[in-house]
Length: 461
Image (cartoon, rainbow, N blue to C red; front, side):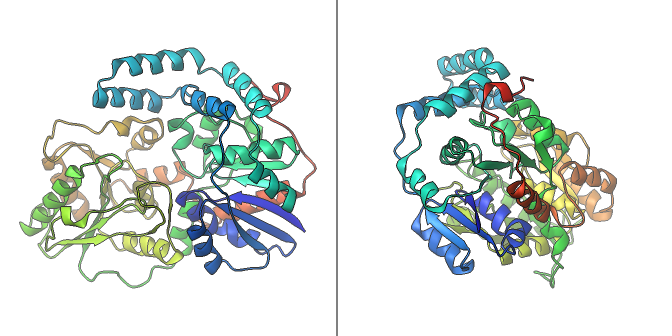
């Protein structure tokens, strides 16, 4: 029996692995043992209850003691990625903090060090110098894995798994399970033997910004979109016609001021029968599964219904959450029957586009229409925006016109929405997750083994 190690340290990993064809296909292999790793007992107990099987194991990774060398390489990785998004984040942080010293330091360090040759050297020494924490060594000794599958190569603990696997000459497969991190986080500290990505765009970005050889990158399709093709919509969640609104969330608006004001604005549009509405519609406010909501801050309006999905394991906003299969199905139902979707620069836009729903992105603040949201210009989202399948509005009047236009004719921009769906890796066969699993199994049984961190095996782009 062969063993695969799979860390599950974030909600995205759980959603995109356990809730897709990846887990379904891998779990069908009778001679395969899968050891999932989580960071706390609550999450382990939660998953064990649902995914009980003799060949499925959930292990808890204790808090690891981090060495000074590990801290150094973790620190320097932040300066070794140069993208439009990184520059945008730096400028946005300067506007918020007015700390010109940190801005100049970050700017200079990024310009000096963010080169493929520097990343090559840093990866080489990172792989050689940093010691593996003893608890991880014990897992390797106990289970003797044949392959490590890593869906968050930006996480330091997953990097530690990858580093130890390299030293033991165990095969490694990386998976970019989100559409933005390769251009918006930091350098991937160590490269796996093989990488799986959603689409052609991510393949190009992984080669350019993560220095991964293109011949080692496989395009699977976007696994998180499979359910929109596989799930047959149930009955309407609401009898009234409704619009789905995805709030900005506290990650980008800590005061939640924009969300409060936008909810009030949308309610008044319905109440006053504006923008092509007849006054009977509902606004479904769909919060992200990793946000904590202070509902007392959002007044109860007669046309507003709050939808707060997900289970949160932690006490603060972050990656420590999960969405059940029923909740994922419900999202498909909710979008399928909606009249249109209003949101910001989030993956909810892509979900809606895949279901051919008109999408409006908000690029103004209700209390200050001249103020813009800078993150529409990020590397990943600007490419979506350029296709024209999503309408960007910059005032209340623009918003009203867009709502009225789409309600009168929802087929407007349908061709452009199809282009966005194709760009993001939506596959109508709903088998992207299965393709990921099949590629893992293919790599598991192959004899090929390389070490991308070795100087002679990494190509400088």
